[in-house]
Image 1 (cartoon, rainbow, N blue to C red):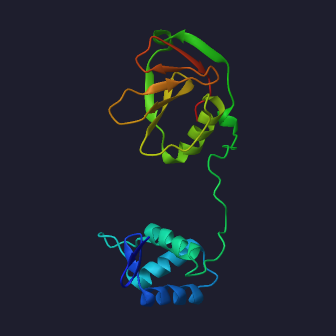
Image 2 (cartoon, rainbow, N blue to C red):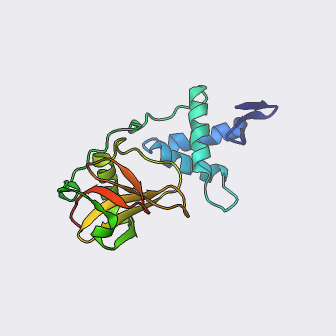
Length: 192
């Protein structure tokens, strides 16, 4: 927060007395709304937009929280508490381990990598949580995620950035091998 002669600056925007009164009137008019909904309404009332024309709702949420902490406005209580790094609890039959396989890659035939589609993201997360030694944690930034198939069994493969060779993650064995490795250890999980 930065003080200016005409008001205080929050998230790049100056909030003078008139702007604060606009914010308060939006909060009064939408008393039952969530904090997210309120940030949209405040952005609309103040015409607070990004260069592409969309609302600057995240900047507005930060500003509203700071205004509230300084006692200039009163926000409703958060509807839910943020739980960082909570355990991934989903368990499905598709994620149950099969018999472990230890074999030369050449003995398994053709290995194909298929990108994980959005509809299979939950299964990916479950398999990482079950079989990766670190478990599942949300990853920041862009990732490419793969399922590796050889015949009827499936492993996990992951590449952090485009252009890098995927790493094949074994199931219950917990090892990671380069996709160009000569052998693989993996738990079988039936295809879907």
